[in-house]
Image (cartoon, rainbow, N blue to C red; front, side, top):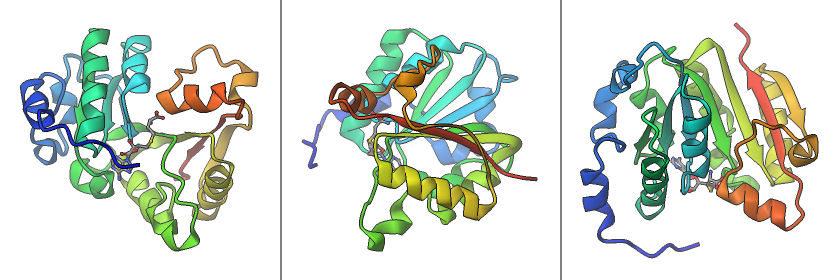
Length: 214
Ligand code: SAH
């Protein structure tokens, strides 16, 4: 989908410097100091879209610090607005490409990574672009702490099956696999924009959490 360019987005992202991290690569190794409670765990969402998940998680978990990465400017502005409206102090947004994750985060800096409704890239020639391809997993392994987790939520059966295999082949341990998250009624689930859209169409939502072995 081609999104309309929003020329005011640059100005907006610069002005909202309480929420939008202006020089994210300079934060490598010191992300926690951006937050009023640096001792709290650091959770990262890759591909935050319009931000309903990260804003909702920020409110639900004041004991956690959150960073949302989204590389499309015209989309991240929506997330920044939601975080602002939520009046939560524990969420920061980053307008960068997550392919450079190990340039953004130090080894062992992150406690949890969320991949929500990531682009499925169904053609096998695009496998490398999937956020659960092994080159991404090795970056997640590097930046995550030993007890760190990766959680994937998707409506896309193909991406879900692919990711379960990719996690397993990488030697990760699977936890909490659900093939119909909404039927399982997790009271703590914070739905994303895509999740609400696909769920309203009657599609099941898949979720799994995996960790690296040490
Ligand atoms: N998580 C949101 C949006 C899902 S769409 C939701 O569930 O509603 C996937 C999002 O990931 C898009 O907004 C896309 O721009 C973003 N994205 C994809 N690859 C990315 C990357 N490498 N770095 C940062 N953002 C990325």
